[in-house]
Image 1 (tube, helix red, strand yellow):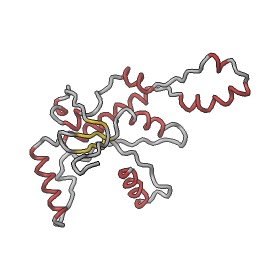
Image 2: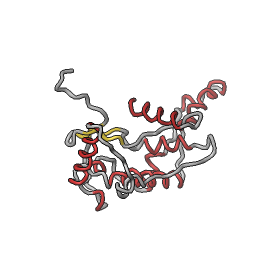
Image 3: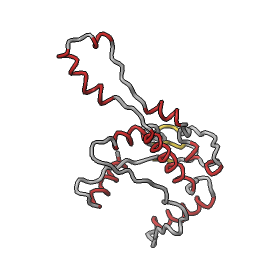
Length: 199
């Protein structure tokens, strides 16, 4: 690869016109997949494995070997899966509302922050000064083994994890799924964060 060639990371951005006024003109939101209806969410999440007639006719000693892969790939969405997808959709999009890369105020703030970091000047990130930024989130808690990770993986799988914006010469990471450290420590969480970001 020559010096002028840039390795493309992620999927190329394709911008979709938005219906929600706050989302219009924000390429980070316009590059996301369309907002889905409840029916579309159900269709995209549901997976019912098909088993050929030939396999169904096999003796039980062989069919038992098909059970694990069949059960693991099966996914039946319920109402809470649809609600969870809607919450994640809102969180992702709302997180970009005050981070419009085409907004002159945002561009100025980005360059000022970058300049302070590069010149090793004191730089303090204050949420109160950032307005509504960082206030969008959700908590997903439940007992072990009930399908939290599977549900999150299926829903996050509806989004490209990395989008490449040629127009903006930027890479957009739409989500980062980080597992808690085995000991629940902050150092382990930071390590998992950096490890996921590098991969």
